[in-house]
Length: 346
Image 1 (cartoon, helix red, strand yellow):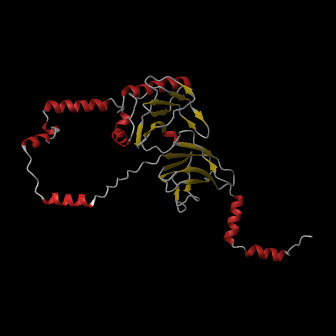
Image 2 (cartoon, helix red, strand yellow):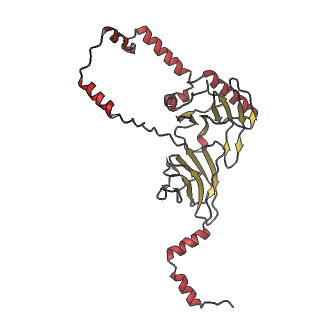
Image 3 (cartoon, one colour):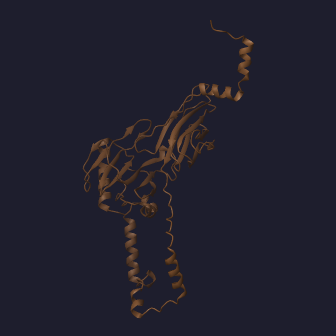
């Protein structure tokens, strides 16, 4: 027969448990798991509708991200801006990370890799809200190469050479080391021709890509392919930002500068050496041995139509929001890919 403890004795045992432990245990039983925010394939942004139930003071949403990536969060509603917080309670080295916003927007680099939690607070009116999250890829950090240590004999030789007076160059040697003419020594006609050529080359690049062209071309380890023109179906302004690394590059397109939400995102262009191309439909792209088209898809969020193609061992892709149906999207993106191949490396 089981032994029953007297009520006063059982209450004494409960009070003997520290209050913090009791509170944590109750919270662990009542607090639901964060609602996962799912990103579609190759997407960098996702949005969810937030509708808190009566009496629900907050709700948590979970996103997995890597250290160095930049997270942008926007919480919008018809009324006043929503309030939220961002934390990484289980991240190694990121436990002290906390970010708060009462203006409906926040953006910043992430200190650690792990599951981040966005806690959305209820509004006074209990209205519906939209939570949009953008995870930008981590930018590659340039690491200076360490210079090899000089051998003691080479250091001694270099020291002796430094003490000896430099020999006077002979006329033949001086002629062989003459530098090519600089722009200041060119004739006015040659300077005008060079400037005209540079202006013509820049004019061939569509306007949205001109500001970031030099940077991405310098950082990227693969040829930079850009379309010859922006499709006429895109009737809103485009702004491009991008970065590259040894394996490829990524260029983000948006309809407003410094876009931090899914609503203003227009798509992106990317390239990666060694990646396999895939998609829903095989298509023919002039100048490419293999290409695929992927129509618009919607899951937790909607992704724009996309085309992927191979060129000289590099996988290129363009995802762009367009009006119309899938057949129209396929035709527009096919022409866009072919114009990028015809234009060649920028």
